Length: 608
Ligand code: F6R
Image 1 (tube, rainbow, N blue to C red):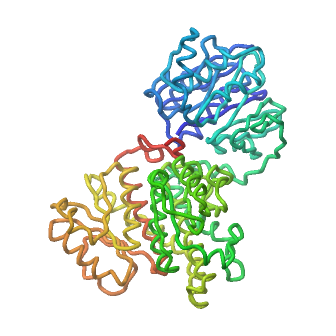
Image 2: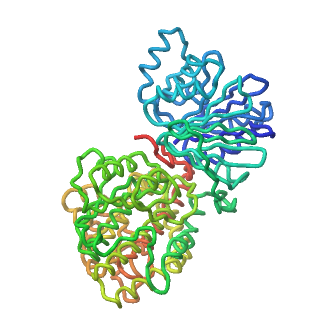
Image 3: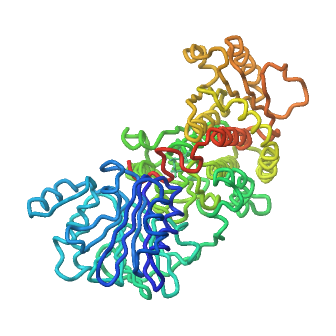
């Protein structure tokens, strides 16, 4: 999705803007641009395609003088990807330049009004109306003009705006789209994402919805939604540069796959004290827990798949009815929830528009909302009644890996915590689960240490046109994630099926040479899975089996086996998913795909 950067200080702005935009590339984009203001004139350079083109056009920013500027990476929503539609957008007389994330819902009536008044538009975007409207309203006062503009706009926005009469300030505003200010010494930054500024400053101020800020090199003024000035101290992010750099890896995806043991360890770390799970952040009383008559989980993509795993775990440990719903479906289905429903929203970014809307809908219907989020202070976290943060660190690769794993970890912690509080498990079971979860990072490490076995399989199968992923129960939930990884990273058509469903239709797709990846980590269903493997093999399939380490012969029914350590049943998804991530990564590498930025995808989907 689109990314914003802005700089005001004493250094040359353009090279810094380009560096910031590079850090936002991971979000996915199709065009980019920068605007700088120098001696009361705004100069804009834009390009379609990769940032490298913009960098070459401006000789890495050196051809653009000026110490103040804004930049943008665009992911097309209104109008095709093109230089004209790329941001920043200028007003007709070049007085204002605007970069915008979000969607202006009433841009058509505004545009019609401005066209009637004689304004000439050049792009197909909703954003251009903001620049044109500012020029239309302008009375010499930048701040007052932007206030008037904001009162006219409907929809969502993170905005950074330049005015040529004010060559030392940027005005920013936020509504339902993330925006932060990076506070430096004799310089300040703005961005949609902390990663773009963290190499220059770790002091961050987050803007809330409805707020506006006027940013100069040595001064930041923040205003609430009634335009009263407010004070807000920056918080310090504790990332080192390496968390947002590849640090020796060819791709962020591989780096993040390898970081999973640490990310899971960090997520568990402070939450187990003296052999007990401590979830201070939620603090449910036994009575409140007892009153929960249904759990309803929402999320999109991989986060939804975590919810699918969670359903099996909550239902088996708590015996509590649990639904899991794709956020975009939940929000429009008039969900059957009430004050006794616990709604769990899962999101890495904390900004996914559909999940945010699902949270708002759940709250409107009186449910308690607990979110599982990676980005501190994000919109979903802010909207929820309580938040359990995953401590995965910044995830840059578009395809999630370590965030998925840490989300699973939170699900285990929450389920065990609730089961103990509700006396659904014995003290010795509780102890057992705690020791298993503490051991999880080491077990994930073991799976990673065999990554070359999976790499060899990727070498054998990278030309596959279709892959089927099958499993039963919790393994089926993991199969869903395996199929998504194969699609999004390696561009292989892939489907996940509950293994028992094959005979009801999908088995007609199996023919000589079809690749079927089977997951069989549950002892009670192992023989059933062996029968399913025999069925597809009888129709010519080649089968890769992922199962627990077992000394006895596994009948050699499959063609290739990947063994994972045997941990307690509910935590096996954390190990089974790792070979699936590695498999897709190496296939994508062999097919020369753009691994960290797969086509058509964005890291944080802030539009519906
Ligand atoms: C897949 C992937 C996406 C996200 C989905 C939700 O690898 O990353 O399917 O899981 O877009 O994003 P968040 O978790 O930010 O709400």
